Amino acid sequence: MQDGTSARQEIALRTGGRGRRPDSARLRRLNILVGALSLPLFVGLWELVSRSGAVNMVLFPPPTVVAAAVLEWIRSGQFLGDLLASLFRVTTGFIVGGVLGILLGILTGQFPVMSSLLSPLFHILRPIPPIAFVPIVILWFGLSEAGKLFLVVWGVFFTVWLSTHIGVQKVDRGLIRAALMLGTPRRQMLQEIVLLGALPYIVVGLRTAVSISFYTLVAAELAGTFAGIVYRIEIAQQNLQTGQVMGGLAALGLVSFIADRLFSALAERTVWWR
Amino acid sequence: MKLALASSPASVESAPKQPAIQVSNLSIVFDSNRGQTIAVDRVSFDVAPGEFVCIAGPSGCGKSTLLNTIAGLEVPFEGDILVEGSRVYSPRPDVGMVFQQPHLFPWKSVRRNIAHGPRMLGKSRTEANAIADDLIAMVGLKRFADAYPNTLSGGMQQRVAIARALANQPRVLLMDEPFGALDAQTRAVMQDNLLELRDRIKATIVFVTHDIDEAIVLADRVLIMSAGPGRILREVAVKLPRPRSSYVMVEPTYLSLKKDCLDVIRAEGLRAFNQSDAS
Ligand SMILES: Nc1ncnc2c1ncn2[C@@H]1O[C@H](COP(=O)(O)OP(=O)(O)O)[C@@H](O)[C@H]1O
Ligand SMILES: [Mg+2]
Image 1 (spheres, each protein chain N blue to C red):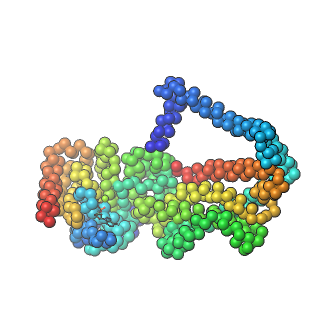
Image 2: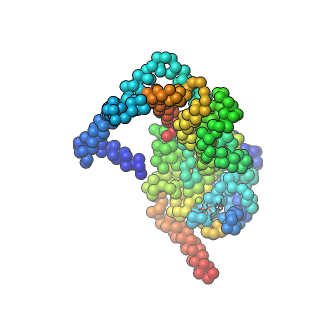
Image 3: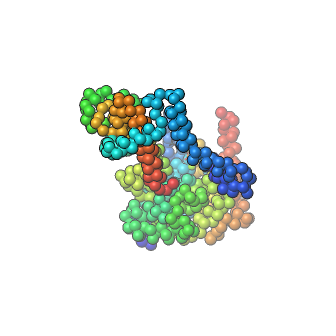
């Protein structure tokens, strides 16, 4: 339904002036223009408001001050260290949590006994926000890197586990019957049918887990560390370097945006038959 | 024909006139929380080697259950089923199946879908692809060999499913309303395709349908089933000449056969109606 409508709209847009809706081409051009202006307008307004004297410039620095702080951050060499520390936590946590989630998801999805054993436990643990584990993680791991990893893994694992579990369970029984009739041995069913059938679900779970790994990164770095983007934000806050705080936020936003885009590009290729 | 068969070829040679399928006193009962459903009730019939038998009956009368059981997909059951002389316990490669839904592997191209069976039976990729390409040509899908199922129409998907089922060179081909989800025009084309195919392959075919016309056009023999519990009411031999096409529908012999079938179905309908009226 939705696809049909959007396709029709697109045709109307492409045929533009000659189509039945002569305004749509102009409307589209206007939208692109407004879209391109959105950020500059916002930044300009911010600069004006900050410098107008209506607000406290220390607490609400203009973009130029933020940019200067970011440049200084990069030049001092701290930025690279912070970026690498954060990326390392996110990627290792994502990979470990993702692999565990997929493995256990296949186990619980495929074998009812495993599901009876583990699903109740997972369903109780899953809704607890990972941030709530910060205090106990500090008790268990102190300020070590293992504690940071634990938090990210925790956040990623449940999302990936659940989507894999559901994906495996939703594999079309008809495909399995068809495969059986073609001589597929039952022990090969997992690799031939189940994994591929569940793949679209697994990919969606992993994609959700990308943003979750960044949420949990924040909690992990606030729990105390010595490098990282969120760590830098916290230090800057303690020194009332608001420009640096905002620069850190922008950096975090940009990094997680890029990670999400990269992953979705990758995901589209993973489910190659769509 | 280089057929590697699961059942021993020796037994087939020593008893050449043995039926391809023997169903005797088959009953299948489903237990559910609302009690028992007798899906198939003491059904017996034989199918000769190379014969094309259609099982026709209203939906819900147990046709799919019957066919799945012959395929080895439905256990347990009461009674006895012999395919090519040996008992059925589980799916076996000399029995092929085409379902109402194509159930193609969405992640495999048309060629890979068809090559799947031979691959599973241990053929090399090259051998399997060669088998697939032959069948692709046979069902007229050469242009779509590398296409993925979701880009094909329903009719084309079902042709791939038929080719896929034939790739293991089954002795017996079971078809469960394979054209049931297609529009009338496509369906007529598919019936003609199947009639043509059938003259080239040597498989015994059991074809299930709720459409009495389809049954008569295709079959050598039509078994008419009744609903709840599923029983076989009557056998109608279809003595229409082969090679055949859906054009037989305009012949007088066809009409008299159809009348025979409709009489049976009507009598059964009246009986069921009176019974429900009385209770
Ligand atoms: N797995 C099952 N569990 C319980 N009842 C079933 C099951 N499969 C089929 N049935 C019942 O068996 C009867 C025959 O079903 P089916 O073989 O699908 O009929 P048909 O293919 O002729 O439409 C129906 O009443 C159906 O509800
Ligand atoms: Mg059915």
